[in-house]
Amino acid sequence: MSKETFVETDVLVLGGGIAGCTTAIKAREQGLDVTLVDKAYVGKSGTTAAAGMRFSVFNPDFGDDYDETFKMITEGSGYLNDRVWTEICIKESWAAYETLASWGVEFPVENEAEGVFVPKHKVDSPFASARIKRRGVPPPLRRQAEKVGVKIMDRVTVTDLLMQDGRVVGAVGFPLTDVESIVYKAKATVICTGSWSLRPVGAETHNMTGDGQAMAYRVGAELTGGDMHSSHHGSADYPSWRGGRAARAIYRRFVDAEGRVIPYGYEVGPAVDLAFHEGRGPIYHDLDAATDEEIERVWQRQQNSDGMESARIGFDPRKRGKYRISGGQDCAVGAGLWPADTNCATTVPGLFAAGDALSIRSAAFGGLPSGTIMGTRAAMGAAEYVSRVGRLVVDEAEIARVKKIMLEPIERRSGFSPNWVTQLLVNTMVPYYVLLIQHGDRLQAALTMVEFFRDHFVPKLYATDPHELRLAHETKNMVLGAELALRACLFRTETRGAHFREDYPETKNPEWLAWIKIKQENGKMKLWKHPIPKEWWPPEFQT
Amino acid sequence: MTIERIDPELCNGCGICVNSCATDVIRIDEKTNKAVIRYPDDCNCCDYCELDCPVNAIYVSPERHSPLMVGWR
Image 1 (tube, rainbow over the protein chains, first blue to last red):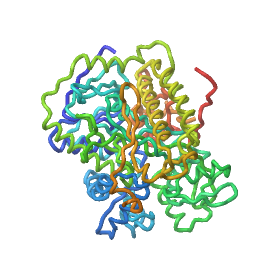
Image 2: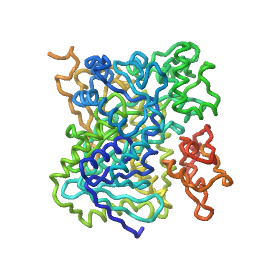
Image 3: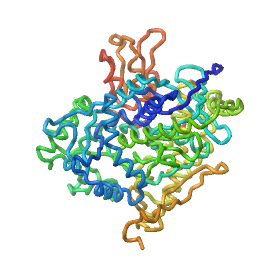
Image 4: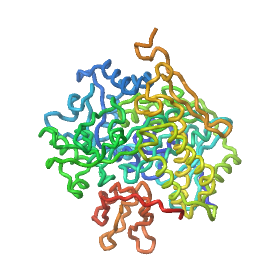
């Protein structure tokens, strides 16, 4: 890798999903020079592309009740939501919808009588939601970014941040196809790299490698989370088939092997996984009891999300039936960066984050509205920072340091293959009895293995080409994310919300009305408790 | 399996599928100028390449099996 390219920009946005595109467009609209980098292709990649259900909107004109909405989010999070962000997400969700609509995002109408919005009684929530089309959201975002003059760089993997005098001044990466390194010098850097979670083979989206969080961790940023995990269930026969998800989301009836109904919903914890854990499997998604209207809704939704796949495997909800499901760790709530303010600054100067990469602690009601809202705010935060930061200086030694780390795996001639290590890691972490139905003994056992991967395999990962070099860095980041999740779960010695400990079944209030914070200190992962403000405690603990 | 085939007779080398694949499974072969499955192990079975192919040259199987973890390799 002898070739080297320099890119200088005001704002460097890493990740081209909904948060990244929104940040880039909004920062560009403020007259800044913006570079948007994605390790795949902006407009097609990321979780936003896979999203195909709904975009929640709160609008008092629809008769939506603010207090009821706030209460639902607060109780659903086990009182751990950041209430400042909850208020932001509720109140700014309508503006987020209007922003996306103005950029050409389509919100399809499935039912003429309903129009764009699914009425709240149909989604069992205190607010309505606009339907979205799977893969329909990202392409207009790319077009808008191009229109306003964002510089887009596709298929570039960024591996680490550049530091100068305690602040982030850019990053270093490489393209997928060439022997070349790209040095980004940026006044502000915004991490929009999505979530950080491992997925069973065949899950609807690939492993979330958490590259941005891992980079930020390595430069000393504070993170939070990693202790809450939820299962997304899949089809046992066709794990990657998305249609089952639409059907299960709309019609939530699950039965065990003997036909007993399993209560389901965010309020009952990992009920389906617990039923399996108790030996009541196989577990089925049961369409036999659905009404004609419910079946029609499942059918309509399916046409918008996965018509082709469902047809290919012969799934037609109108025939009803029981479908065997699978479960496992497929967590929606990986660790994210700790926001230092409400404009998405992290605890490291020059570094911002938005979307799933920034943790607002279950404050939101859906990734797409909150991604848009955070992106809008991150652009404001970054613009303000850029306006007061001086001339950009980056030491050659710092660039050389980060480049060396980036290229090590491809210069290594022997060692361990990234795909093999990732497979070991997924096999260690994904079984439901690690992060979903937890026990200290099992968490510790998994941690012992992950520490071994970290110390023995990661330093000797090798890559034969740039494709594999990207995998090597992703593997390294996933090992770090696994360690973080296991330590966070071990640290929280109680059961609450999406954190279920067999050895600590009680919810400990007010002792654990606290967030877990994590950062690197002296080369070690340090965890500590950050109490939530006392005025946010449940009413019965207020004195 | 996941992505099973790209039909070289149908492929027109437009390269749309290369950008559709977030995990970089597909590349354009430099000699034939046709899309080829270069890194099959990394296919996530998302179907985007098949959905985006303007000439219907790609087939992604809905089946996906976890590879057996039998030993080091």
